[in-house]
Length: 258
Image (cartoon, rainbow, N blue to C red; front, side, top):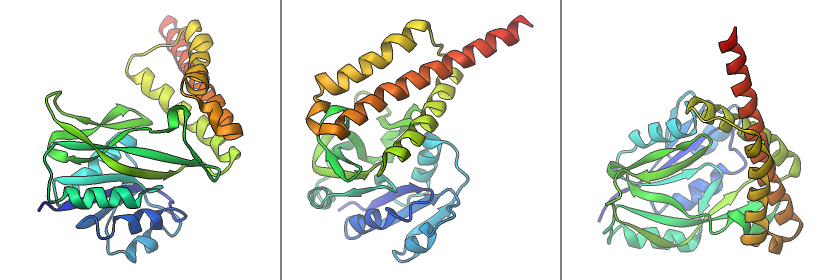
């Protein structure tokens, strides 16, 4: 039977971290929390669960999560954010997996709660995530803030577990607005550093496509008002990302012309 490490990154997660920790107890053999110097009660809550608590200045979402993987005692890991938890079905799936681990990694569906409502459509469900894996064959990659676990080779074999990762996202429209502004800035800067540039048609067409895909093709309309709000913000973060990237590109061009 393999041993599992539960790996979490946190910053000011006092309202949600206990759900996360409780869901890992009895499933994993150790819990590792890498915290970005929280100023709330995150640390004291973690202390009740005998976790391996490490404080590390925030390196970026991808970098922080890869650092956290290095702090685990075991190669087989369950990686969660502080606002996520394992459903009972997923807990049972992972416990059973410990005595029958045959692949390099396993996907799980993520079920998102927005303003008290579980969202069942648009881009928010099933929101498949590779979160149970052997760290020797995978790492966090992507473009901040859109991180994802990626296998190191296309030859790696992956499966899918029953059950959901429960994710408590934004609990108010105001919080959603603030995070949209914040994440669009991170995304624009990350794109710029990668050499990506924005054109007029990106600003015009990409937000429209983002809304149409989420609201119509992926049936976001079935989630009512909150589904509409989510799909509008999906378009909005796309719009903000490309306008900010366009601004960065213009500043670069102006600097080069001097």
